[in-house]
Amino acid sequence: MKTTVKISKLFTLENTIAAELFEGKTYPWEVLAEIGDFILKLGPTLPADEYDCPKEINGVPVENVWVAKDATIYPTAYIKGPAIIDHNAELRQAAFIRGNAIVGKGTVVGNSCELKNVVLFDKVETPHYNYVGDSVLGFHAHMGAGSITSNVKSDRKLVVIKDGENEYRTERKKVGAMLGDYVEVGCNSVLNPGTVIGPRTNIYPTSSVRGVIPPDSIYKDRGLIVEKR
Image (cartoon, rainbow, N blue to C red; front, side, top):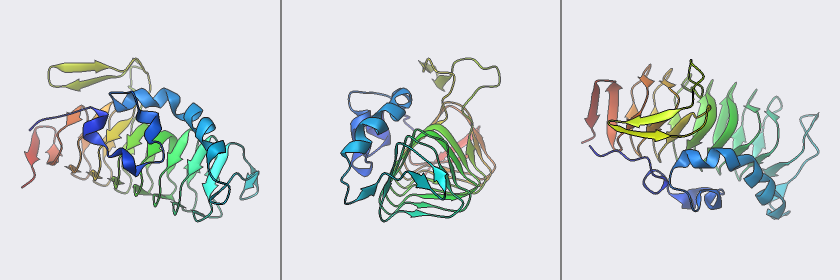
């Protein structure tokens, strides 16, 4: 099974408002340092008949937040800017957006979920008790209940992404997970810092995942990854 960590192999860029952010880059973690600035550049150009730039949300003052008029924000959701909440996205009760977040069209951020420095492509689902930080989730990726991205190593060293004998030095202390299009992550799984999962791959529930996982595969445990048939 071939693995890949390149943007061109992981994502369909037509399925995100942030396509320009990825231009000129090879690997997805290269966008992490630029998400906030990109939002501040893109936000003011969004059409006023489609997006609001509210001064407060749920009674809390906000700035540099753009919300599509057809998005649904539940009463206890909290959004810190800079952030873009795209068309038909849904932020449910106690969703916590900590800033530098792009939430794609039709995306669900569920109860008690936390996002920080992320790009969620269109139709992503983080519906129940998920933490997603310093990560990129591709089109239609789904995080099962309680699954999280761990974005800092226990020794606090810079994250190195390992793919067999190949190593990719991110030069960042915080790197979560890069999920390709249509990835399914099972409930209560932990994606360790620098995890890259190829498109259409399924992760078994309660897994602890690290490194690069091939596309079109099923991750049963660290020593058992099988190709989908």
